Length: 121
Image (tube, rainbow, N blue to C red; front, side):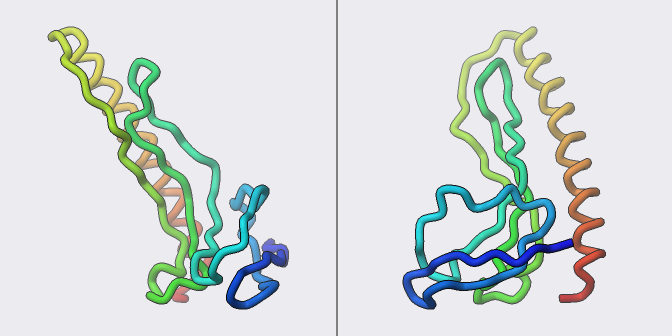
């Protein structure tokens, strides 16, 4: 069930909108433009030997100018990882990527359920 939240914006004043159950909230919200309001889910840091390779989280931009961007999606950000690896490290890196690929597939399944619940918006 979505609850109604109200967030201040610089161009539309206080804006009330439904918050998806997966949203982690808006603590620390800084008023900006209404079009930039975004719901974010739990952040998943996918790492290799303590370094972040990529970050993934559910997201939704309810006031995006492009209608498709208003649907829930998976925000993915590639980190700035680089390094020279020996053969054993390359194998470990490849194994890590395989684990992360499985994690991304689980997030895709979760997203598919959420989008089905949202319907054809």
